[in-house]
Image (cartoon, rainbow, N blue to C red; front, side, top):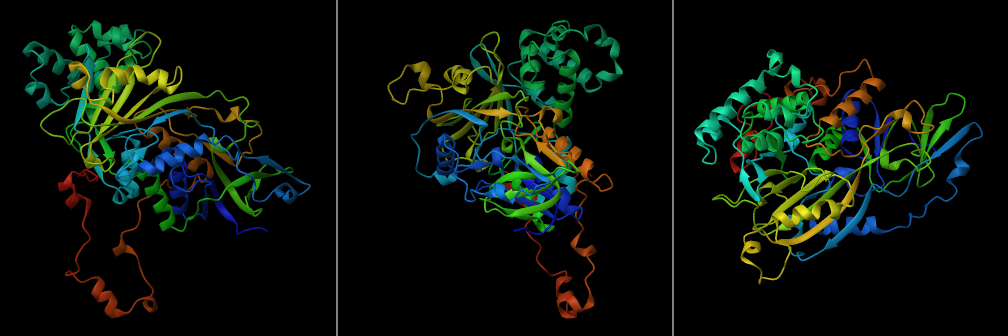
Amino acid sequence: STLAFFSTACVIAGLPESIIAAACARSGQRVLHVDSRNYYGGNWASFSFSGLLSWIKENQQKADLSDECEDWRKLILEDEEAIALSSKDKTIQHKITYSQIVREGRRFNIDLVSKLLYSRGLFIDLLIKSNVSRYAEFKNATRVLAFRQGRVEQVPCSRADVFNSRQLTMVEKRMLMKFLTFCLDYEQHPEEYQEHESSTFAEFLQTRKLTPSLQHFILHSIAMVAETDSSTLEGLQATKKFLQCLGRYGNTPFLFPLYGQGEIPQCFCRLCAVFGGIYCLRHAVRCLVLDRASGRCKAIVDQFGQRISANYFIVEDSYLSESTCTNVCYRQISRAVLITDQSVLNTDSEQQVSILTVPPLEPGRAAVRVIELCSSTMTCMKDTYLVHLTCPSTKTAREDLEPVVQKLFNLNTEKETENEELQKPRVLWAVYFNMRDSSGVERSSYAGLPSNVYVCSGPDSALGNDCAVKQAETIFREMFPAEEFCPPPPNPEDIIYDEDEIEPEESELNNSPETKPETSAEESSSEGGAAVTKEE
């Protein structure tokens, strides 16, 4: 059987696909979004504690699920060809778990991918422009930390932080302010860095008469670039971006969505649904149907043997079969999630959202990004912290990340430990896993892909979400070059109703100034949230 015709069909609901679906629906296209999983977000999702354990169990199952429609290949006509899709997600590997917390598991929202939002950039601009920000609340990251000489310490970010800092001397404060001022408009002073363009950013910092502690802060906690691989220009650009984001919504450049990163794809799914998009979870797709004459994809076949026709098809990389991805070289991301009993740096306030970059502990390893979330982010229960560790993979996630975990945390669950270990936060539960990084893969790397099938990558290892926005906008403009990408939704006051559609009494009632407005995000920000709104 054949279902209704759609302008766009999206297979799996990751962040880029959700943005594309919202943009298509907003421009008037008919959108169908199907996903074999029973939750939104794909590898961008967030889970409760019990939900994460179920996800781990599901990923440990090696056998593919049996087809509900075994003879779906009989639905392919003589002038058509089937491009089989994978029914098993192989993007997650090397899962190692040990559990101590089960009670109050519903209070946890554990992200598969760990990111923060820069307060300026493509993603925040999209949230504001499309008004998707009304579907979520955000909390400021309260501090940036550094790991130096075996200790965790806070990094002064803003001008006020620098001058109030007790860890910097007066000379160091002047040095730091002078360098950061230069970074804000470094393009206007090319003579300052041109002869160092072929050098690494770390080597450039050594020429700026900065103390070792300042070099460490700038390299690892402000620019957050690799010590051996990042050029001078890359470091200056990253430092400028950090500084430009300061002060827009708080004292650091970063925001975190309450209830976890998994809320973001759902927000765009909601926008798509508001404008007519249809969502089908627990609905697997078996193959793409290729028209041999035109070389274009004309339909998909689902698990029930139904054909669904569309003009364009958006597929997440993990859905493609091994034969399609034969020539693709993937990178991997090492991830760890910990539940701990205290913060890595205790202060008077327990409600801290912190980002910490741990430099490579040995040559050939990557720096590890640590994001620590408190209970006011709605991601963990009271008196616990949720800690995410991320780095590009060199080995398995446990081999990459456990040395850092041992430096920062006490892995001994027994109370009788040495004094040094007692000062560290105790790990109550942990999971390690490797996640495929399919960002940056060229379209030509996929074998036999029709021109109207677009592939979206899974999560990348970068801190922000700008890569997903660029990808979504690029694909949308290729499909609909004449349409605006995610235009602002109409204001309710601007919607014109037919006279027969609404009674005069109802119209007067709706326009009455006495009608109580909904609580805005700004009002709720007094409880720790931050409203993402356009600046005046």
